[in-house]
Image (tube, rainbow, N blue to C red; front, side, top):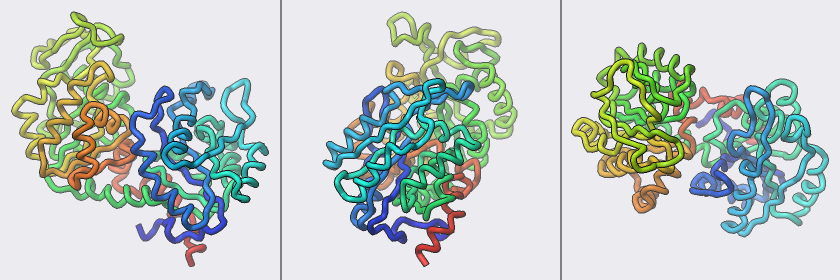
Length: 435
């Protein structure tokens, strides 16, 4: 941590502070779990107590089409639920500026003069704070090149100091790295806390069990390979398990892309030398439809009954009976460290496997249990609210605000391999200000 400028070392009095947060918790206008918002309050209170003025920015969802570059400005990607939550929780009114839209490609062209009056009011103290629109609505956030450079300068032009408290946003996007080129930049309290606690994964108590699921194999193969070197056991779920089973047992599962199958084949080759580490669930749930859990349209499949060439419909869950098998129980109950970045089923209809798994993990009262990822935490809270509330105050649990960030750090071999952390380390202005 001594290489990273910290917010507690910054001069914030009468400064406008741009804070990049990870408040990406609103789904279809509803906040299921405000955990990642609440975790940033320490940083926000510190800035205000030191006389700073707040401008916040976050991303919400994935509004940009990667192929066409067009940006979807549907209200489901709006920050309004987040601003409403902050108003009700903190009695603080954040004003959201309006910018000029790109009528052809969607999104905002950039940060224009519409914000100038709000900045003046913020300095004068006539408004509480500013919350920028979804940062991924700006063309330069993910596009790279000239647009990225331009947006980085524009964001920096809003403030005197930059604070990154978005540990869950590890991608090298404009708002997480480019602002550091222009402003004294610091890690917020949440960022610092997450970096310190990731050591529990890099230097765990053994045996270490990792439980990983996801809807895409391409973002997981690197971290999975790195995890196999580190863990004692690995349990997979979701699409990555389905793709793995498809390749291993030579079966066809509806909905698995050719790209995921190709990656799964490569992973299977890697996994051959780690066969004893991979714990397969014995039972999976097949459904004829994605429309819901319809009686007569879904069934339990025993993996040992799979035949080469067999065609299956959608596999939408790890059946809960898998977590009643001796091997699965022994692996989970004997683990000393457990890292969970997993929702096993296609929620909300197929959630029994996830619920059973979380419950079994909770029975291991001695293990150091680390949960990461927005979906993981939201489902934990939704499925087992009593266990979740107890876990928040349990020293044997730790909830990371970003599961994907942890996987990326594991793949890089160090948290300093994350681009936003590198940007803070390279930023010399913060250290100069401290000196």
